[in-house]
Length: 376
Image (cartoon, rainbow, N blue to C red; front, side, top):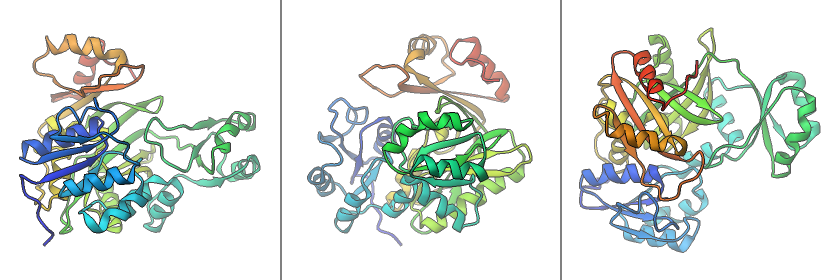
């Protein structure tokens, strides 16, 4: 049995953004102390933490200080340096294996990992020069997508290429380092599933979620996804395969494309709380954040029950004023605001979840009140 870290102990969180804030809120409800490492003294998680180290989380001395003051560590972002985590691992419990994080930080390693499990991925090629693209498109075809191999913490940088005429504008991305060229999959729906596995290899999963993106930002999620039971089972199967191969302790989100024939192609793996599962705060018997806390602290994880159909909408800066007005008139809507002090365009400031019987009715309600523009 793994070491159990009981309430009253301290969870150190690397990063202090809104994901760390929600981890901290769930952990504090359970009775844990929270320490934060983040250079921003006004960061969302620091506002509710018991203490904060106000330095960059790339600072090894600061990370060591966080470890010395904590009983277990977790992280909120893919941007964490896994080499630093490996160096402090002998001195502090980091249940989320840095090797698992490394897989999700590099798109080529991630593709190879999934292929080793016979999981479908989009056709791809490694690109270091324009000549590589010219050769790759002979088999991949157009349209295709050029991405850096390193996964960015912020909005991903990528170029959608429709013909060889687009190679020139993609050259700036190649100057920054090795890239990956992926085939464009004509999908009918984007799906995500969050799964969890504790240190005793007990596995559980949240329902499959339908995700809608615009300009590479998640706009809304619909849960459960409007797909058949066979897709739910296949998504769970993929999650279980990946969790077992990673020796996962914690949570893992799998994002996929589903074609019109029902084929699934995995687009991305994420080993920290993901926005596609934020509906769980109000729509499930337990949230993804509490599940993470339970996993890293050696506590048992329960079977997850979905209360009702949910639609969750991410509140960007441009819709913040409308959301605050609706907070006064919609007591049955579940609002979450992230406490961000700096306001800038397209910044995620919170989310709202609506529960009901029909996703179409919930989506229409969001559209009627001006929060959500039609994506149909």
